Structure formats: C-alpha cells, structure tokens
Image (cartoon, rainbow, N blue to C red):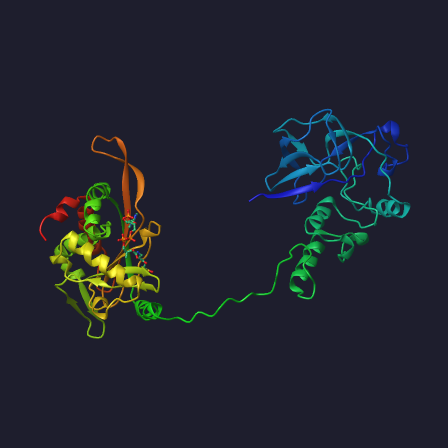
Amino acid sequence: MASTLRLCTLQIVQLSKNVCKPNCRYMFLSAVRPGTIVPFKLSDIGEGIRDVIIKEWYVKLGDRVSQFDNICEVQSDKASATITSRYDGVIRAVHYKVDDVALVGNPLVDIEVEEEITNVDESVKKSVRKERNEETDSQEGHDIKVEINSNKVLTTPAVRRLAMENNINLKDVPATGKSGRVLKEDILVYMQDLSHSSSIERPSIRTNEKTVLGENMPVKKYAKAMWKSMTQSLSIPHFVYSDECNVSKLVKYRDEVKDTLKEQGISLSLMPFFIKAASRALERVPELNAWLDEDAQNIRIVKSHNISIAMDTPEGLIVPNIKNVQTLSIVAIAKELNRLQALGKIASIPLADLSEGTFSLSNIGVIGGTYTKPVILSPQIVIGALGKIQKLPRFDELEKVYPANVIAVSWAADHRVVDGVTMAKYSSIWKYYVENPMHLLLGA
Ligand code: CAO
C-alpha cells in the first residue's frame, strides 16, 4: 500500500547563468535576493523513485505561497507525497499539468522569492562543498539534496520531515551518515530506543500510563452455572448451520392479535411461535430432542419437548425450559414464557423449570445481531440462535420487490452424534413453520 509522505524540499538551487558566477558551481540560498525567480525542483523522495505522476495542483500561476504551503500531490508506484513550498513567494511558472510525469530533479514550479534567504554560514558551505562529489547530483550536478539548517545538522528533507512529524530534535539523534549527516535509519533507531526506554518520556505520545483498577467482581449466581455448563460444552465438537427465514406473515399475524391478548394480560412476542415451530419440527426429526450420555456413548431420545430458552435477566444468563411444548398452544407457550420472564426478573426461577430441558433456543435478536454460533447446553445435542428481524428487499411470486421481514437462524449440533444433513433437514422444517405460521395453529 502506498505510504503518504509530506515532504518539505529544501534545495540549494542553481540560479540562471546570468546570476551565477562562472566558477561558482552552486549559488547558495544566502545569495537569493528578493525578486529572484528560482526553480522549485522535485527533490529525491527516496525509495529509488525516479519519476512521479502529478495528481493534483494546490497552486496556480500568480498564487502567493508561504513556506510549508502545499504545492502539489504526486504519486509514484511506491508512495504518494504532498510537496510543500520551501519559500515565501509568488508562483511564476507551473511546469506540469495533472497526470503529467515529473522527473526527480526537474522544476515543478518557478517561485519569485519575496525575502532574502540567509543563515547559511561559511563552515556549512565548506562542508557542503566537500560533500558535493559524494552526493547524487541531478543530471547537471546543480541540485544538492543535502538539507542545511542554521544549527548545522546535515540531513535530507525527507528525514527532516520524519523528525518533525515525530517531534524529534535532529540534534538529539546520533548521526551515522557521511560528514555527520543524520540518516533515516538514525531516526528510526532513535525512535526505537525511545520506545524501549521507560526512563525517557515519549515526545509525541502523552498518555496516562497508570492503570486505573475498578472494583472486584466475583463470579456469582447465574454466572456460576454458566461457567460450569459452558466449560462442559467446550469438549463438544459443534457443527453450525445457518439459514434465513422470511417471517413477514408471522410478524403480520402477531401484530393482528397481540393487542387483544394484551388485554387478557398475555404478552405475545414472536418467541412462542419460534418455540412451537421447534417442537413441530422435532415431531418430524425426533432424534434431535435427546440427551447424550457420553460415558455410555448412548443417546436417549426424549418424547417431551422441553424447550429451553436462553434468558437474559438482571442476574445474568439463565436457561429455564417450557415443558411438553408438543401439547401446548401458542397462547399457552406465551403464558409460560411470561411466567418465566417474570420470575427471571426477580431471580426466582424454581429448579423444576431449570431441569430436564431437551432442546434449546436463544433469541439474541432481541438485542441485535444477525448470526451467532450458539453453544450447546450439555447433555442436549442441539441449540438454535435467532438474530434480529431485518426489513430487507425480497421478490414476491410475480418477481416484484417488496420489504420482507427476514430473520437468520443458526443451529449448533453436537457433531459426534448429529450429522449435517439431519441438522439441515430439521432447519428447513422449522423454517417452513415460521414462514407459514397458519400451519403452526393446526393441532395442539
Ligand atoms: N428481532 C426483532 N425483534 C424481536 C426479536 C427479534 N429476533 N425477538 C424479539 N423481538 C421483539 C419482541 O417481539 C418484542 O417486541 P414488542 O415490544 O413489540 O412486543 C420485543 O422485541 C421484546 O421482546 P421480549 O424481551 O419480550 O423477548 P421475547 O419474548 O421475544 O424473548 C427472551 C424472550 C427470554 C428470549 C428474551 O427476552 C431474552 O432474554 N433474550 C436474550 C437471550 C440471550 O441472552 N441469548 C444469549 C445466550 S448466550 O449468552
């Protein structure tokens, strides 16, 4: 992935021949007088990049720019970079159009500088002159890539930018380059040392490093039971099968009757339908309503559909069951669910309601989510989890799009004793019932 750099180019520029003395190969910045037009060249971005594509100009002819103002955005096959101005001045020429290829070392724009540039002393000049044979000059040898500042730290613009972005004073960085020049590697090593040294405060990251502890929370009540049962479940190889069901008819039907039932003190959610559908599907695939005896390697198929319901209560997760669902109507299931929810709220669910569950359902969609991988409650062998009903576009028989109520169901089965086909078959039957709720109303 292309990294984004911001570069400030400080160049010692070649001035036009009429302002350059014949035996002077370099005109130092100190010689640039106000009103001089200087070519602002694309300096070496590093990474071996020889040319770049101009992606965007931030300036146009006649614009006044200050140091560090954005000039343009360039892109190479390795990096993108924002080129910023080194000078205060006015743009007098723009050498490329957007999407043109610009070569490193060639001028991007010409800037008429506004102020005299000084601050380069003799000793630094000497050091640069000494180095110039070692530098990778541009084609004509006029453009030196060494950056000089008033404190005599030698480095490249890219390294200066790296130091600036990380709030590092170049003078603090042990230099390993020629003539004491600070290299990019020097900065990286310095930053690494900083992060490893606990005694040195990180310059750019100031966090409260002290860990603030909250209160101790012992695992108690329902969470203790969850700990035990879920730890037991760890040894079960779970096979998970998911599907989507269009419950538009069910939502409509429930909406039609819920207020009438409310008047009778019964809260009818969708859950009783899901529970009844589970029982109806178990009538067709009875081997899934079972307890597994691991030691005896035996499965006991149970005739009673005691459907366990994962219930969120103020004390945590609890899983009571509604017994003999195969004999109960939707309204009777709703009443049982209401009773268990009321008891769950005050943490008073009797043991009888917690024991002998044969098959589980968990409706996490009350909170949200689409798919989840439910965990089997041993010795049961199957659990189903429901996501949140979503309004999604679907096709009707005439292939017209309409807003459907869609719910995702995920079944987890004990793969030691339940194969995938059996689970998929069961899921399809359950799906049929929740998509066609009128069939649930037939029989008990
Ligand atoms: N998508 C959208 N809406 C849903 C929904 C779903 N999947 N399931 C329920 N709703 C709606 C209900 O229809 C009801 O709507 P109204 O206010 O219009 O009547 C509302 O959400 C609240 O329903 P409820 O809380 O009474 O829930 P319910 O009867 O549908 O389900 C119970 C009961 C016990 C399953 C649920 O309250 C609960 O505790 N779920 C959490 C289960 C859980 O913790 N699972 C994780 C187990 S692993 O840690």
